Length: 148
Image (cartoon, rainbow, N blue to C red; front, top):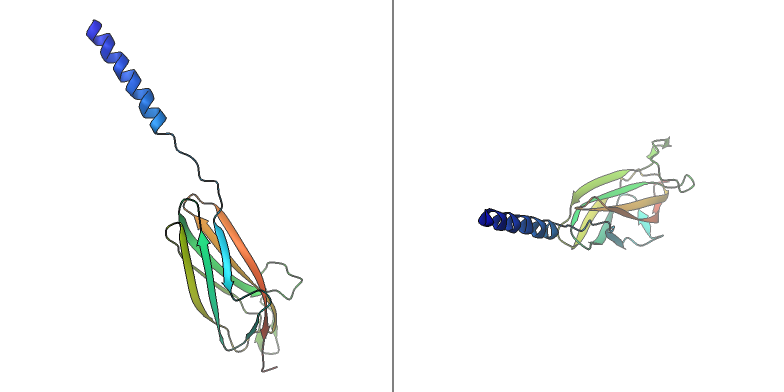
């Protein structure tokens, strides 16, 4: 009987020790997104390539990114417009990808359509970490269309 009680005490002790070791800390910290290029208010020409460079960091682990570009000459609201003006389009662009580790960089060459409406555009770069925390960085750039 004494042996059974000792085994029970050992089992209970191991259970509590195991429970304390299983405590996990929730990751609630958002990743950091820095848009290195283009820079805010930079002038971009239609029909050219725009070089996008962004760096991402997270305290635990990064997961994915999304890049969004849309016309911003509508009072700076973040919405997509599809109106056409004299054979020019309000250009929209979107892409996604995978990030790795605690720090990562993307470098994209984005083709700007020749018939893109000139004006202000918003560029947003989102980051999501493995825990699902999301952050976004926005800049505005000026698109010039020399065919006007």
